[in-house]
Image: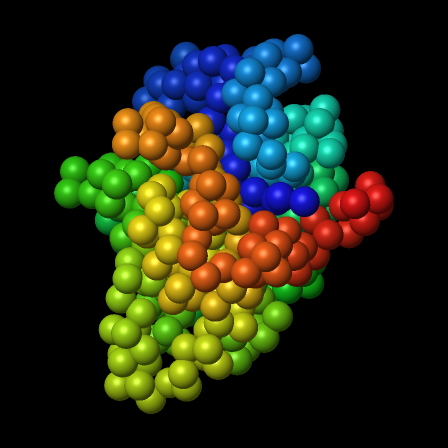
Length: 342
């Protein structure tokens, strides 16, 4: 199998975005506010949104299953308060669940958390519980910066996150560490903020001792880890300076990277530097980079071809990246696939 661990519902029916605009307008003028029940999206509309888009590309590229979560840039946790985020997360998570129910052998849901700046992360636990127990979510997306590019949240190693980690460990679900929209003009959302966050999250984990307290917790850092593979020597040296064990012992038992790197040299570097067991296949298709690369004639986010063209990657290593590692990091996904006879 080929499992894509990083998919977002970026092609949701236009009614979803219209509802969100109305919700935001209602924050300033309650007379125009909207309710969850006002959003009506049919199964046919869901089919029309994914069949010519994600499903078509999955078929073209030979991808069997996608871990499917709400659109990352739409999470926008900085908007409104916790109740705003809670209502928005519930709607987005339900749509991903409905898509997964319609195409149960192609999509499996991952949950957006209703985070809000300055609000205790423990408030996210009810939505996490609902999505795992009712929707069969196999993972969550965890935003280390709910402020939208201003970085007001404590590091991921801070004890304020611990109640959420405890629930994740109880359910044995990993988190993809994924920020949302940047409202800071200094940081372009997908070109800077996403990659800054990947790098920042990794360094926070190097500085702390989170996995001593949570030895079974698993975190996926997307977009190839940001600057991490390129500066692996820097991180090794900083770990030494901080008196931490080697990275292989300190973080690589719990931290994983995906293959959302959109050119061959960058992908080759990822495969060369990071141990194969810590790499998961992903594309984030129809995401930040949607165009065709004029140098190759293929979409930038067609990441399968980078993995299969990587020099020095053995057939077993490729199989681990494309399937086996995901089944290990996402045990609820593995259980689902086994129930399906796969």
